[in-house]
Length: 238
Image 1 (cartoon, rainbow, N blue to C red):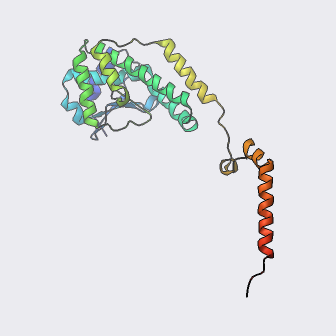
Image 2: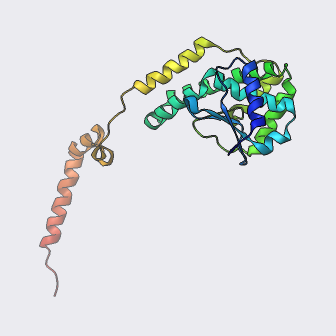
């Protein structure tokens, strides 16, 4: 990665127009990645693929840049940090994955709307920039701590909302509810399971115990025992 004064100044100008508290550092990369906000706290920075940015016109570039700045202004990178802390403990919990998906969907909708407003409502150019970015990265997965305009799992829904003007505004109660659920999952006690419990044989079921104690089962056991004794007493020919 390398720095670019030209792109840093452009991002600073857009950040000022969006009333961001500060301007994140901009790094240009040569790898085929999507534009993303990566990092935590004061170390959060915007990563831009240089080849993709040269393929877009100015409005397409501004749309993607405004999307990442919207993530930064909202503090979505802090949510990614919380998810990264909770994930190793509660990857098995379905509520965690549902909350994570709903948070991501609400974030992308809000950032799409902000990017469209900042580019004078040019929805088609913004949608084309998203499609160009998807084609550029060839569906490579995002790092777990990154926020990006290119989110493969919900791209079709986002494009439909962009072109049909169905973007919802930022819903504070809904986001707060999802964050509350995420914090609640983080505070849940993690179950402790010993290796002996994992590899222990399961206890016999009630039906199997009843079958073993039934009269028919005892009769079969006695017949087998008598058959074994008869076999052992039978002389063999030399």
